[in-house]
Length: 563
Image 1: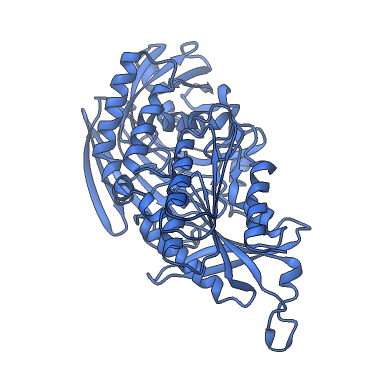
Image 2: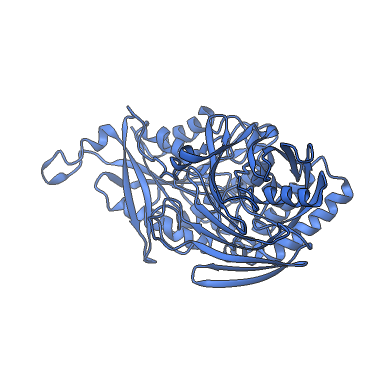
């Protein structure tokens, strides 16, 4: 969801394209933080379980696992998340010889083709990765270490295999090289059997520690990531059978003064986008009251624009306290007389389209959304605004610069620098912020991350465009009123970029610019005195507070002349 979010996206190769591919060390923290997994014994009878990963009472991830003597399959999902399917082929030495993976779109209908799929084969010091997406196939050979185990998003199979390897070798501790699908890197993990042949173990990587209870066959039976307040619960039998991967609920809350209408936006490129349009109730019920269905009044409207990665219309991020920013935006604005259209990204929910597009391609989707609103009799075509967050802050100026009819633009944690400058900062910051590393280790890890990035993520179409795109020339063409909102502690898009946007707009002659930098707010506009993405999992509340939402709403109500 955001350009540099721990988002769970796959907008490139089989890698996290927004949080993961950019924040290698952070990614690992998030992957481990969410480790939802468990499987049965390789040498025991077939086993089927469901792993539920909880933070407080909120479900972060659900994983259904089936294990036989030589294979493990897993389906991983959660609220607002695409489904990740994994198939492992196991060797006699408990190593993973090969695996396949498939990513299904969020809320995709049964039988829909996967967004991407592929295979991984580990041979000595090489990882052979084949990725199929958007009708294209990419074959990569990446360096790793002999005996490396694959690490997949939100999956615990690797830890269970490490337990089996340690027990077979009759050791109580084991250094485990890990090949991360999310970044193409090889990281170092360490397993400790708290008592050999006993019932507990610890698995550490990148400073994150997962403590697990285990059975005699090496299966995880429960656990926690104490530092993040995350629990791992294992369900079997009837309890597991009752678990399903449900559809997100985008309806209006009970008693809300607005209605939520499911809509479909057709694009000139030929694909459709699924979304929700919230309409203030007093206005929507008055529509059609006259003969012929002519509305008594028309509503101002906002189109929200998500950050990078495969985002649903709420911009849901489970690891950040159940963050659903655009649901909050829609609720806040629609209570104040403004309709809000929020859309699933390409490949999410019922949305089609090529997920390997660039920000410029996604700008065309937003143009289609604006055009759709202009066809509705209940929307005032002269009072439509854009609200973009992170990558959405890149896309909004692209649309506004070519559409003078748009009434206003809001840039939330939008960028002012080229992607190369942002990525360089993020890659280094992901390592420099780890106090457990020595300076020498930091230097070597930064070099390794940059090398890995250059050979994997940097080659994806979205990333190639992002790395070279300079937002400022387009921003200078925006003549509409602009509100720039920024978190002061944001370590993904720094506050200096908001100030640069403000200067560029004013220097180009736009005098209707408002800049607001909120103290102690991170990239998600959540209260966070540090702001580093590695700490998102510790955030207790994923709700953006009234100070931020109030500023947004007050400005839009005034600018759009809402009731």
